[in-house]
Image 1 (spheres, rainbow, N blue to C red):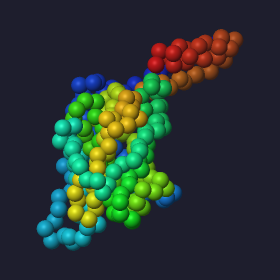
Image 2: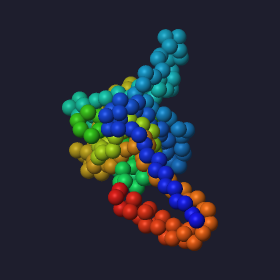
Image 3: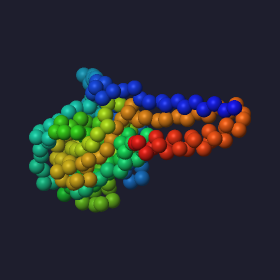
Length: 238
């Protein structure tokens, strides 16, 4: 005789708990087929600047990357600088472990342009379900070549915690790496590709595991027929 045991491993995080969760995102950057090491951004208290530390621009920027994520309102995200702009941006959804339509792994690709050749810049990326945007990644310093379309920058991100299931909007801030001035902003008002992005952190991914214990007997063949039906019903409810 065969016994069938079904175990459901379901995340225990409730919606209220999600707002109390630490925001934690792991990202990898790509440009010109070169890929960075993973960079983790959180809303916890980050590294503090040492007054005796090296004041070089690279060290200062590393401190920005390590600093806690920040929030901005849509109204505060205003800038006017004709020397820099973001020509285009779009989102690619990569991983949805529980097939519920909400993805925990996604990519943002954007093409920043400038009137200058070989301009040094960096970007802050935000997510929002309303008018308040939460920063989830600060890029390293990268270079853009005038209005070339070959210098697109890609950030692959994995939402580890702090993002309940929902439709999000992406906002991109572009900064001049020389003086840290905000030079361009791009969001759903500029391109609809940055709106209604179905996301959730991995703490909300629900994965069902099916374990079959074979104890012999003809009943086992019936079990093998039932299991696919149960799995199809589970997927249809997502």
